[in-house]
Length: 438
Ligand code: PMP
Image (cartoon, rainbow, N blue to C red; front, side, top):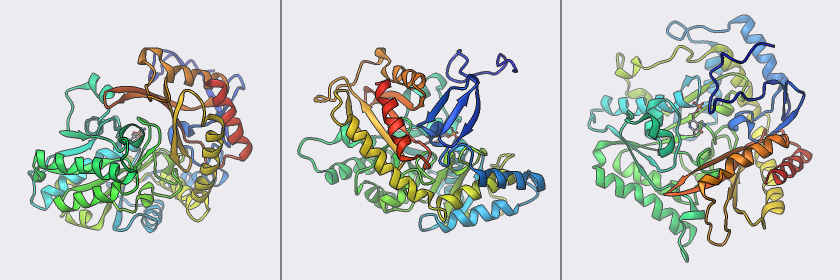
């Protein structure tokens, strides 16, 4: 066995267990211990760990043409994948800019949006508005745009100027006697107030996840929220940039999460489930109007990465997206997601420390609270989320627990994002193991 001692591990000084194989919904470590992949890594492994069709596509492509630098060539897998994505994309989305992962996709979206306004003669637009508690990636630009204070603090000062409004988070935001619709309009209207405060012609766009993943635990917007956001963006001529890195690619039961909100963005980012873990890949999709604004020689053409449109990654993702759409795996996410939701509610609906169970498709979150009545979270020093992660791991379940500051209050939640191939028995196993961990 190679020594792990020269690997710079993420997150901690500790060396994690060594993974040696994966099959279906399970990962196996070097001691033969099996883990049910309840989080798909981080909402990545939508098809499970040993999909024969994706493996065959990679083997076929890598033997013919692994990589051709896009400074010189386009490739057939990239063309095919772009066609397939656009055919299933929200109305108005027409072009696909390939990258290697989620942060690159968001970084590309921010630079694309900025350059778009330079191209159309509105260079005064230099700021972004996003939401508090949001995470849009770890590169400096994407980190700047996000509103996740504790991730940003160690790296301050950051790059892009970004302002933050409240997230759409009914569990903690809805007031007594207020309907969900009224709550949605009230928080969406914060965008307009912030635009007016900043001066609308200084703002490039509004960045948001349709279903908030890592930082809040699968929180969908309430009905009507994104329609109002779309109206406000249109009224003030700012771009709506949706980050579907985590919630896209069938994860919420539709290929793009925003389909369920009844709106189309100007720019949308995807990654994670696009490669399903088989190849690193992401993409920034934009409208024809944005693409067409870039004249030959435009500043945006200075942007770019070495692995754009990587032929093998595109060949793998093309099979993944084919399985998600024509192959019915997105419909399976919707169906199994309902069953997972029912199983979670049956088991934990009355749990004294589970305040909320939420999500869409195979993207579910449980919010952990000290007191259900008052929704008071556990004190952060208790490290509840870390303890749950460790206990679940011990029990052979990978889940994605996070704690964070929610408008000044600290909370804990568990995010579940299992492969869509999960069986009913495995739903039961997941819930049992989570119960053990709790
Ligand atoms: N945006 C969102 C919404 C994400 O959840 C993530 C990753 N958790 C990213 C961007 C960054 O993606 P990556 O880690 O692939 O760079």
